[in-house]
Length: 116
Image (cartoon, rainbow, N blue to C red; front, side):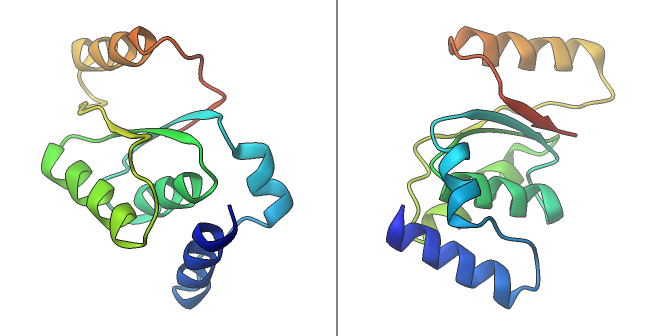
Protein backbone atom coordinates (compact mmCIF):
# COMPACT_ATOMS: atom_id res chain seq x y z
CA UNK A 1 0.00 0.00 0.00
CA UNK A 2 2.73 2.45 1.03
CA UNK A 3 3.40 4.87 -1.82
CA UNK A 4 -0.03 4.61 -3.45
CA UNK A 5 -1.79 5.19 -0.15
CA UNK A 6 0.30 8.27 0.59
CA UNK A 7 -0.33 9.74 -2.88
CA UNK A 8 -4.10 9.50 -2.57
CA UNK A 9 -4.13 10.43 1.10
CA UNK A 10 -2.16 13.56 0.26
CA UNK A 11 -4.52 14.37 -2.63
CA UNK A 12 -7.63 13.87 -0.53
CA UNK A 13 -6.31 16.05 2.29
CA UNK A 14 -5.49 18.84 -0.16
CA UNK A 15 -9.01 18.62 -1.53
CA UNK A 16 -10.33 18.70 2.07
CA UNK A 17 -12.20 15.45 1.43
CA UNK A 18 -12.11 12.34 3.60
CA UNK A 19 -9.32 9.78 3.64
CA UNK A 20 -8.82 6.32 5.10
CA UNK A 21 -6.30 5.56 7.79
CA UNK A 22 -3.78 2.83 7.00
CA UNK A 23 -5.63 0.49 9.35
CA UNK A 24 -8.98 1.04 7.61
CA UNK A 25 -7.38 0.81 4.17
CA UNK A 26 -5.96 -2.59 5.14
CA UNK A 27 -9.49 -3.88 5.80
CA UNK A 28 -10.66 -2.63 2.38
CA UNK A 29 -7.86 -4.36 0.46
CA UNK A 30 -9.06 -7.10 -1.93
CA UNK A 31 -12.72 -6.35 -1.16
CA UNK A 32 -15.33 -5.55 -3.82
CA UNK A 33 -17.42 -2.39 -3.88
CA UNK A 34 -19.99 -0.94 -6.26
CA UNK A 35 -20.11 2.85 -6.50
CA UNK A 36 -23.13 4.33 -8.30
CA UNK A 37 -22.52 7.89 -9.45
CA UNK A 38 -18.76 7.36 -9.72
CA UNK A 39 -18.38 9.57 -12.77
CA UNK A 40 -18.16 12.80 -10.78
CA UNK A 41 -18.09 14.33 -7.33
CA UNK A 42 -18.21 12.25 -4.18
CA UNK A 43 -18.67 9.03 -6.13
CA UNK A 44 -15.42 9.64 -7.98
CA UNK A 45 -13.64 10.51 -4.73
CA UNK A 46 -14.92 7.38 -3.00
CA UNK A 47 -13.90 5.22 -5.97
CA UNK A 48 -10.42 6.78 -5.89
CA UNK A 49 -10.01 6.14 -2.17
CA UNK A 50 -11.13 2.51 -2.53
CA UNK A 51 -8.74 2.02 -5.45
CA UNK A 52 -5.95 3.42 -3.26
CA UNK A 53 -6.77 0.72 -0.71
CA UNK A 54 -6.42 -1.96 -3.45
CA UNK A 55 -10.12 -2.77 -3.47
CA UNK A 56 -11.93 -3.87 -6.62
CA UNK A 57 -14.28 -1.04 -7.54
CA UNK A 58 -17.22 -1.33 -9.91
CA UNK A 59 -18.00 2.22 -11.00
CA UNK A 60 -21.43 3.04 -12.39
CA UNK A 61 -23.15 6.06 -13.83
CA UNK A 62 -25.21 7.09 -16.83
CA UNK A 63 -22.34 8.56 -18.82
CA UNK A 64 -19.70 6.01 -19.80
CA UNK A 65 -17.35 8.84 -20.80
CA UNK A 66 -17.34 10.09 -17.18
CA UNK A 67 -16.59 6.58 -15.91
CA UNK A 68 -13.63 6.37 -18.28
CA UNK A 69 -12.49 9.78 -16.96
CA UNK A 70 -12.72 8.45 -13.39
CA UNK A 71 -10.58 5.46 -14.27
CA UNK A 72 -8.05 7.73 -16.03
CA UNK A 73 -7.96 10.06 -12.99
CA UNK A 74 -7.21 7.10 -10.74
CA UNK A 75 -4.36 6.07 -13.03
CA UNK A 76 -3.06 9.67 -13.12
CA UNK A 77 -2.51 9.47 -9.34
CA UNK A 78 -0.17 6.54 -9.88
CA UNK A 79 -2.73 4.00 -8.70
CA UNK A 80 -3.47 0.65 -10.31
CA UNK A 81 -6.83 1.13 -12.03
CA UNK A 82 -6.91 -2.43 -13.35
CA UNK A 83 -9.39 -3.31 -10.59
CA UNK A 84 -11.57 -0.30 -11.39
CA UNK A 85 -14.30 -1.66 -13.63
CA UNK A 86 -16.75 0.68 -15.42
CA UNK A 87 -20.32 -0.63 -15.48
CA UNK A 88 -22.51 1.94 -17.27
CA UNK A 89 -26.00 2.12 -15.78
CA UNK A 90 -28.99 4.44 -15.50
CA UNK A 91 -30.30 4.00 -11.95
CA UNK A 92 -33.75 5.21 -13.05
CA UNK A 93 -34.11 2.38 -15.59
CA UNK A 94 -34.90 -1.02 -14.08
CA UNK A 95 -33.55 -3.02 -17.04
CA UNK A 96 -30.31 -1.02 -16.94
CA UNK A 97 -29.91 -1.77 -13.23
CA UNK A 98 -30.59 -5.48 -13.78
CA UNK A 99 -28.01 -5.57 -16.59
CA UNK A 100 -25.44 -3.95 -14.31
CA UNK A 101 -26.19 -6.47 -11.56
CA UNK A 102 -25.71 -9.33 -14.04
CA UNK A 103 -22.43 -7.83 -15.25
CA UNK A 104 -21.07 -7.59 -11.72
CA UNK A 105 -22.40 -11.02 -10.76
CA UNK A 106 -20.73 -12.58 -13.82
CA UNK A 107 -17.37 -11.36 -12.52
CA UNK A 108 -17.77 -14.05 -9.85
CA UNK A 109 -17.16 -11.93 -6.78
CA UNK A 110 -19.62 -11.02 -4.07
CA UNK A 111 -19.86 -7.38 -3.05
CA UNK A 112 -18.67 -6.17 0.32
CA UNK A 113 -20.41 -2.84 -0.03
CA UNK A 114 -22.27 -0.40 -2.25
CA UNK A 115 -22.52 3.37 -2.35
CA UNK A 116 -25.62 4.82 -4.00
